[in-house]
Image 1 (cartoon, rainbow over the protein chains, first blue to last red):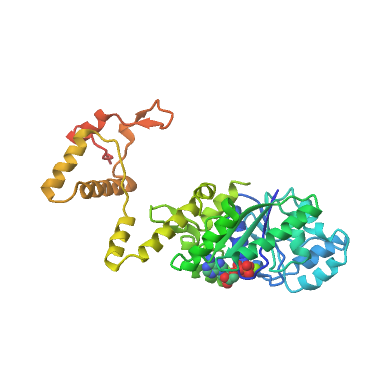
Image 2 (spheres, rainbow over the protein chains, first blue to last red; image 1 turned 90 degrees about the vertical axis):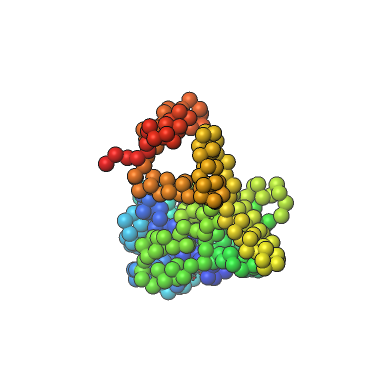
Length: 259
Length: 126
Ligand SMILES: Nc1ncnc2c1ncn2[C@@H]1O[C@H](COP(=O)(O)OP(=O)(O)O)[C@@H](O)[C@H]1O
Ligand SMILES: [Mg+2]
């Protein structure tokens, strides 16, 4: 099983959208996928048309030998470990436990036979679950908006990644920095894209265009593959030379190169 | 941005940056030139290796119609491509196995000339 963590300490950078979109596409393409929500907001479940549920709370209980994992089927080939507001007390319990940083790694090991890919959607904070996600991950994807804080935000995640690599045997690698809310009409977008490229070079992935369809889809409990599979955020933008650039289809293709 | 840097980045990202820079340069041009630059950016020069007879025929049609050879080539290609897409025409009967490592198939010049003369056709018989 390959584990991909989607993380950025900043909120609203497209983490959950990216996690759900990636997980569902891989499932549609025949991979057996587990999607783990570590954010108290529980938006992974709602984006898939399901109710929020105490999946992380139950995970922490499982880690204390107090019951089974809560895994919910969401689509064909796609299961989720959901989250809700009980994730907050769960984190407090976890914070006092030994080996807390291995909780996700151990849980995924337990489930390794059942899935080809695990995707972990991280909360916009540096807490025990953020660390646990990076410890469990083989790859890290950092979605970022193209604003003046972008480089800082990515650097913060990479700093925590470096710290974790130093402390544990886990070796997650940066799969890529994913620019989101890409709007090529604005100058700022281009300036920030260039700044990102200068800072992170080949790690900068083709961007996801800004697209209101992406905002609408979760309200219907649908992924973008169900709601508007031909929308800009999927197929990308047409460049001057006729090539198509960016979008979640291209992102998924880049991810598949590492699977 | 330095050149060697750019070669080490994702090709799709590189093309976006290049295009963005071109767009910015275009915005700095006077209005009249902006429109022309935009038109030029939407076009591409392509070089194809085609039989002399075909090139000559394109030039003749262009002269007769009073348009550019590029216009004739673009239109006839567009028509042919659309027909290919809907299955009205096919390359099938004209392809032969190729010995080149680059291509699986080749279309001999002779076959192209026969099509030009009307002795053979790409039309799919229904
Ligand atoms: N490329 C995009 N274009 C437009 N809206 C987007 C895009 N990506 C995400 N959104 C919307 O922005 C909001 C924040 O995205 P989300 O994925 O929840 O971010 P995060 O998980 O990082 O907080 C959501 O309403 C989402 O639907
Ligand atoms: Mg989120």
